[in-house]
Length: 324
Image 1 (tube, rainbow, N blue to C red):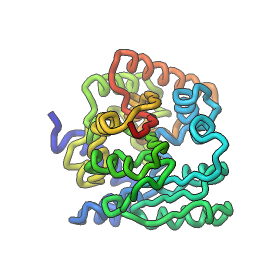
Image 2: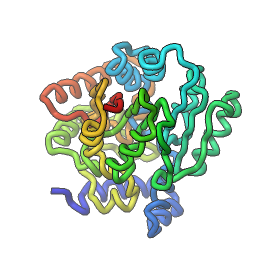
Image 3: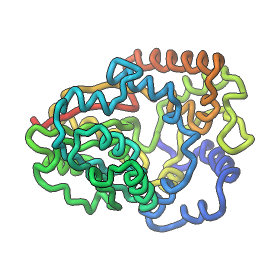
Image 4: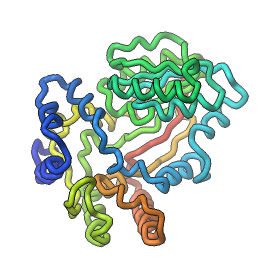
């Protein structure tokens, strides 16, 4: 049963006190959930997350495309939209637009519409689009998804890239996205689809903490602190809601909703059940390219694959869907 407050919350608070200014904590006292969401994604702690690692990105490439050096964007366009240059796409929750700019640069799109709730992210995205000469190919704008009018049969592609798990009423959003697709259009996700509010299973935590105990201390130093990561905990619901009420709010309902409303053309299990937890706050220690780091990452990848082979539901998923 999920707890409102856990020991992990106290550990996390101690760490955040070592990293944050007073303004960050004041932002979490806002009664507006929307403002707390914006404050979370307007901060710069990304180097502590597992997805920054080139080896992790190659691992995802291989699981989805079969080739660690084949980028997912090229794979999607070559497999499903080869030869097209007239595509219209929607990409909600675009952040600073890195993925969207990559897609726009490949020449298949007439226009990409991309929005995010954080105005600062959109400013960065627009600036980068201008620098790359892509401002006519992509329309970045600030928007709350709950107020967005998807339209009817408008898009060749609707792509949720690590954004859908931040949205409530996923069934309704998926239904709206489905209606906005052209008859041959595709809805694609690259998403966290694991337990809502990061309520990790006992088996996950046992595996992660055993691996942490065996890991050299030099790899366990937390980002921008002198603290050493010793254990990973299941977060309390109070901390999750206070910090970012959108985080994994209905993540466990994403795949069932997609599979009930659309036809699944392709699905790839991307894992993350172990690596997501294990590398949280310490991923920056694995950026140095040397034998020790490479060997340790290979060991961790193998451990996660063995865990997934027991039949557990992967926490991260890539899927391609079409109207039935």
